Image 1 (tube, helix red, strand yellow):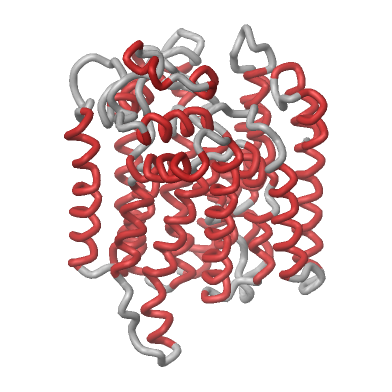
Image 2 (cartoon, rainbow, N blue to C red):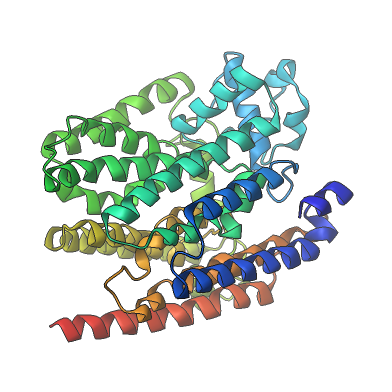
Length: 454
């Protein structure tokens, strides 16, 4: 893929099929490595696993992000903030920002609206602009560093929960992670780092207590980290029900108050954007547009809109609002179920697995699934695989998500024709029909295990 980028200066447009072909080769190598690691424990040493992972990221670090142009929005936001203007105040194409014009402005997406990124993401954009200006590679390096930091916390949690150490392969060697972080520099690298650090510091006190070291005096760190993760992208809030019983009341209240307090400066400066016209300005203005109008590569949401509406299922329709209400209701049910199950099963392994449950529901039900949206679930995949004392058929639970991490790259076919961005029915079928089939099998397997225990 690096050589492809070197030759054509892009990985998409008419190069997209070749990019996907090389990705498929990498994905098959990834699956082969998993099989070897499972059948020959110790064959892949930690040094080899981490060394190969870092090398792969360094290679893609030399490519220019083209599969996604989000990075140019990040750079623009940081540039605007560094010059004293709130990134939530004005759309990119506003004439009032002409005095700040730089090349990345013309490369950024959705120029008709202000920034959709939350304050904790903006802090990173601002800091990197202060260090390196509008240099793309600074964001790539930062996201690789954060994402490898997340992997470090995953490795510690794997050891604490009695999982084989080589399961870190499920994150470190997954081509989707490498491409979306090292090539595209998605802010999700920062988000998963904060989230997994928060998970570690949430469970660390009890782990210390179990080995006789006493309670940690740094439990508050998990609250701050989780607040920052939520303020990078809202999605980390979905794992909170599995946290609830691990936090005391001051931690729960402190998390809520800190999250709200950190929103106030941005909201009061540029407006909240919660009401009024959908002009994309204000702290939540662009997010409102996203929730109202974005539809891309969805699974169950797509087929629900086709069933309720005679339209094509791709463009916004009146049925979307009804389906989103149903989805919201299902998500509330899943969150409550996770909260209740977390109360009944408070051991580390169960808690880590329960955190994945609302994220699975989100991926299945949401109206937009870009490849990098999947990273928040992939980070928990090492904990869904069988632990040391579990049968190998437990891999059935991970199978849908391993498959989707390979197939979701097909969604980049949307950018095959720069003059006609569109979705292809065959892409959706290849992505979602096997995923949903494997998911149904995993549900049946899980139900049989519950009955057997009963």
